[in-house]
Image 1 (tube, rainbow, N blue to C red):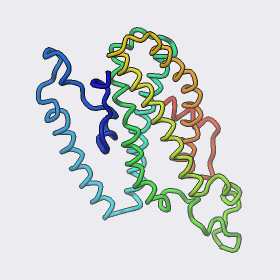
Image 2: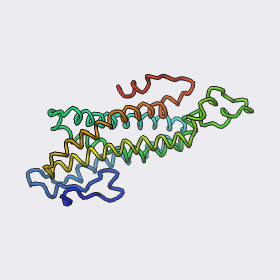
Image 3: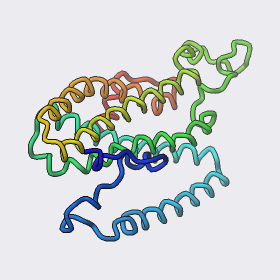
Image 4: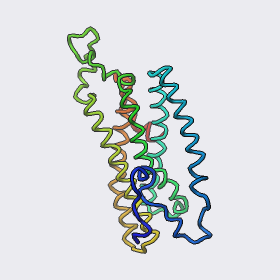
Length: 239
């Protein structure tokens, strides 16, 4: 069993927590030159877009951070959608989605990469989030904002970073549990594995809902802290 589920090394673990198993598969199920075909073109495209992003940052850093946040949030919501698909699949004991389950399972392991790609947003917080400006919280400043000052216990940089890290820790743990148990099911006929997947999904669904809602408040709604909506998290989830 360990032969099939060997954990990969860092930094490969950011892409897949387990080593490839195609060498153990029957010849009919092997994809020859898989690495070159699967990674070559996307890698070149990624490098080209990275260079383009650096150019955009040099020309207009403030606009770059907003554009980057939009693109990053788009990728995040797709990954969250894949995670919710898996949670619902297991909790409902769905049968039709088994044949496509590997696709969302591969997608959910984007959380570690998205966490790394969050770093530019951290450095651009001052441009993105008005509540990070010290003067709006200082009563002696002419730019003092009483509304933002009232939200300071929640909207402050240390607490905001802790919350974002907590979101990604929870999402990554859910993704890892669902993915690893699913792979184990391929090589182990233990009938308890589906039950374990359902148990993870049972507590994962409410936790998923809460974390997605609060993440949407922190990452997107706080861009304009004067505006608020109790249903904004539902908009993000539904989208």
